[in-house]
Length: 417
Ligand code: AMP
Ligand code: GLY
Image 1: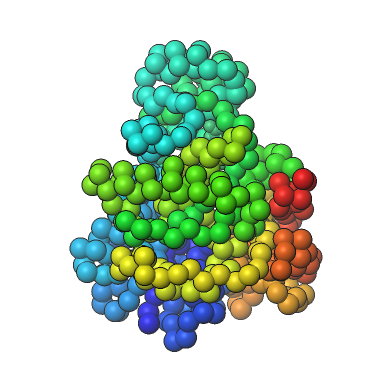
Image 2: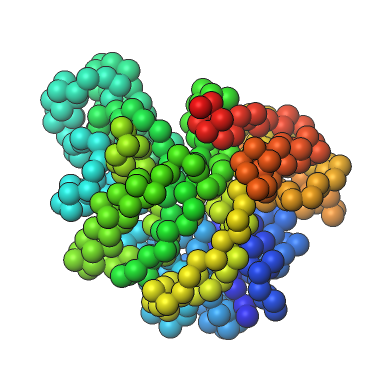
């Protein structure tokens, strides 16, 4: 079977690794992939989605899995479907749950799904009036995709107005910020919830938790994510029932009513406030680094993905290992501010029950180089979180590249208790 995976991060690497480890006779292709996916298959480096679909047709690709949101927002799924090709992910219209925060917030309001109080606007005076009604902190968000950077938490009314103006003027995020969302700040803890969907039915994956801040104890700037673990003991059965009943089911029903039937991964960034789940955001693909800790726990990833594309999720069961996974992101020296010079990656050894998912790496003269951003994720598996964490950090200590930085406290919301 030939599978094409779109994206270049550790997320895409981890999907490939899990498929390889659970299914025989797979030929994997990546576009663009990274320096390490070359060891799992073939890197194509085709950017244009029409050309990607052409390649898939000519080369008889059996399944395309979309890792990153950019391809989805551009409509890669629509093009594949027009060409009768099999692809895992939502259409461009359904991907608006992630690509437009205005659409997402109005959708949540319309279908009575709990979220922070908000205003969507492209008018500064309207923004000012709403800001004056809120008590700081106040959250200001750009409407469009900003690679995780379009959310600003402001501490005063003046700052909220200033940031709104900068976004609306196109100064902060270009066109992505010309429409904005202003919302109340929610205080609680965040969970990453993943439902694999086929339009009508869904299968919930183990609940994960991301660590978005650069530094220990959730300090420092926001990043793409510095580590994750799953399953999270912070998600009780009672909470999961609320998430299914009050968020996932109305979302799938609502999207159908809007003529935007949802297929693929529905990723809910949830804030849990006094045991009630609120939707902070939807994403329409796997999280990164959450994917890197979920994939190693799933025994039948290909069956799950195929069942979503074939609309028969209700006939299959998710098979999970009875284990926990912890993933620690090792990033380059200047992450998330700017890129660093390339440097050699030296790996002493990879201890049992641990592995690496590679992201910002290139292969030069057969040497793997750290090429910037988030470089790789050290994943540890164990029969409990403590053991998995130990495995992940043992692996971190065995890896060297210039300026390596990583958080030392992945899982701290659980361990601090
Ligand atoms: P988003 O891209 O909307 O998930 O926002 C990025 C991060 O900003 C989230 O993961 C939260 O940590 C934080 N955030 C966003 N919206 C809110 C909110 N209304 N209250 C508190 N924190 C928020
Ligand atoms: N880890 C959060 C994201 O992938 O958006």
